[in-house]
Amino acid sequence: MAEANREPAESGLEQSRHILSSLFHRKSKTKPNGKKPPIEEKKPYLEPDYTKVRVVDFDLKELVVLPPEIDLNEWFASNTTTFFNLINLQYSTVSEFCTGDTCPVMSACNTTYYWYDEKGKKTKCTAPQYVDFVMSSVQKLVTDEDIFPTKYGKEFPNAFDSLVKKICRYLFHVLSHIFWAHYKETVAMELHGHLNTLYTHFIVFIREFNLMDPKETSIMDDLTEALCTPLPPPPQNHVTER
Ligand SMILES: [Zn+2]
Image (tube, rainbow, N blue to C red; front, side, top):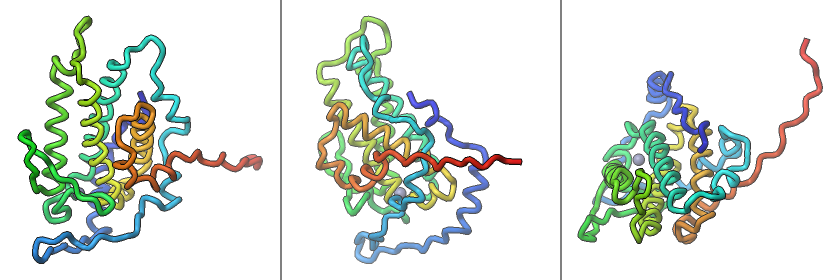
């Protein structure tokens, strides 16, 4: 897996956050009639200065291909668990800026996501509540030995791929919310290279195995295109330092 993604750059995080609070003096978004706050159309995450920042320079597509001799479900399980951990970690860096006031609904690119409880009932919740639902339910699944078996000889359940698809959808919602609502904070902490790389890795994995309906990921197609385009090689510099 992408080891380079694992570094959360913990050091200096608190300091960055401190600087951040003075940099981004958030206006409190009061919402009359409980309506959605006005959403900025500009997408800072598409700025070429930001999209070119990545933490690895190899083709992530090579990383997602099913290795020979590896069981597909096993591959799904290990990738899903890793993406869950990395996305959870990435969200934790902005979680203090994601509150019921800043994010009264779970949104990304003018799309609002609603949580459906175990009985299938649509629930209205804030973004941090939604993320909490996602993380706790995925945590429950990936640590369930009957669903994500880790012991040799134990079988995966029949509908394992549909569970994986469900998890991927939830994780996509969290990732796209970070881009949509918390990109500025991510940039201020200089963690956008990690976010960009994590997103690209995730989306090439999804595409390789058709784990999500392209209609659902289309809200982020502009970003996907920007990030999946290989960077031009750095200019050759023949000047010798003295
Ligand atoms: Zn938020």
